[in-house]
Length: 459
Image 1 (tube, rainbow, N blue to C red):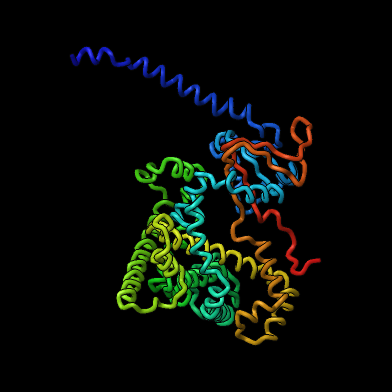
Image 2 (cartoon, rainbow, N blue to C red; image 1 turned 60 degrees about the horizontal axis):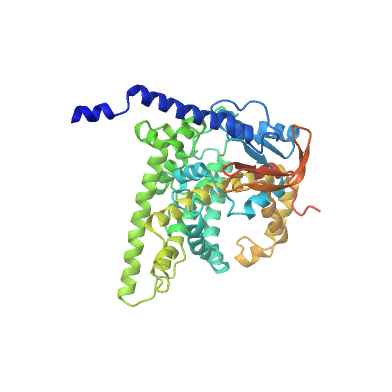
């Protein structure tokens, strides 16, 4: 009986042949059929991009050198290649393209690969979520940034900003004060000092998000070696470039997560270390707040008048009129906290740091801004800040020139036609005012490449 069953099994040769045929069909489909039939095949494309990373290395270049050259050579919209020269995608700084993609969120969603990348650092938070889960999370977080919510943050932001100011002033004025970070250039001339503005501002925003997000005082800015300071160090180390943070190794980690469990990259080790510590902290805070709310409820008292994000999320789940499907799950609450810490602290710190650079580079703008602020005194209220026209113009210009998110990558969920503000001349000589895109293809855009001169109140 057993021997008869063995005889009926396909031979090894048949399995090998069948597997080879399927592999060949797949290779022909990916490397021949899809590129040949791609609606983007005649869109201008930079040379190269046939290696394992395609054009990804050039696109991810923080200086944007190649991209600037490509825009000059090919215009505001062109094609770039994915890994091994296939997976055609659009790269555009055309404002009409960006408007179309961001407007039609039902067609253009974050790609699975991008969500997996973001999920490494932000878990299941607002940026990763799509559809109904995104709406639920956004509804809760919007309460934090209502006019009343923003006003309630005023004093917290003012106090932390004053602390940042005092630390920077002390580092600049007192050259004997100990430097809390390793200098990039250890051979400075006598009488000078290197001040790491970004690292210092990052600690400030990390502390602020801690207060606003979970009602906790990290004080990583004032106490670099305290518990909050050590958590920040892990968090900062996680974001530094290291093996596995970019390129083909990162692509492998995202495509086949099992590889990271067997052979974790240095980046994966750092992410696990930082996110593990953060998750432990978040769970402790969740339990603490849940017990606090349960105690208040048992005594029929009022819920504490705190407006941090964690309290808002827990209150949302306790609301009597809410459906079970609209409640936030524990992993979503942790994801929201992770998102606000990562997206709220690092992106804000980057914009502030580059904003300070812009002001240092334009002393005339800095002097005019300082004069307007000093007319209102040293400590400005929320309403006073809101009424300063030049400050408002400078802040908006800083955010325009230095957007917190440098770009976006979206994946088409169905075939579509993208309108162009600037026509594109195809390689066959035809001039088109729109681009056809196929389901599954990507559209990439870098917002910072659209910006030009720093000019508040330009006219």
